[in-house]
Image (cartoon, rainbow, N blue to C red):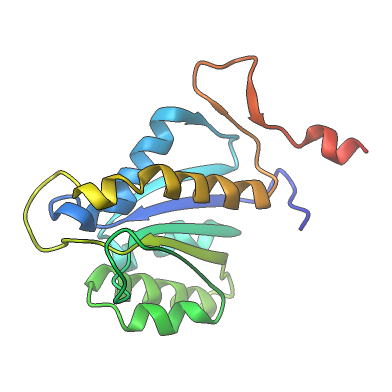
Length: 180
């Protein structure tokens, strides 16, 4: 897949940080912002539980990577990658209102004729009902794995990024790939 530098790519973390693992997607965005620098066409967004209010953000993207806690009857810490036709079926079975609203926002994008290529990355939560700001241990332990999956999706879209403070150390640079 050849992506130009003008393609708008949004990485959107959703969830409620007040309910332990429910805030997983937002916590991933916080970590990505703290660790990495991305080009101007890549946007890292904390979507919280805004649901339909994210319509503008979603419709402006050419490529959308959503990060969330996803209940899928797996064991806590199971990772998921959902794309294409599987998105509506998998989200409709969820019991979180922001996930239903996210699906509705994606559906409304169709009415605007501006549906981004969407991939949803998620983790099976252990607890999304207890009030608490900390992720549970099995979910915290999967943070590095989901960050690696987000970076892999960005690499698939030919995105260059680097660790903050590593001016001369580019982790992913595709300029030379395009010159050959």
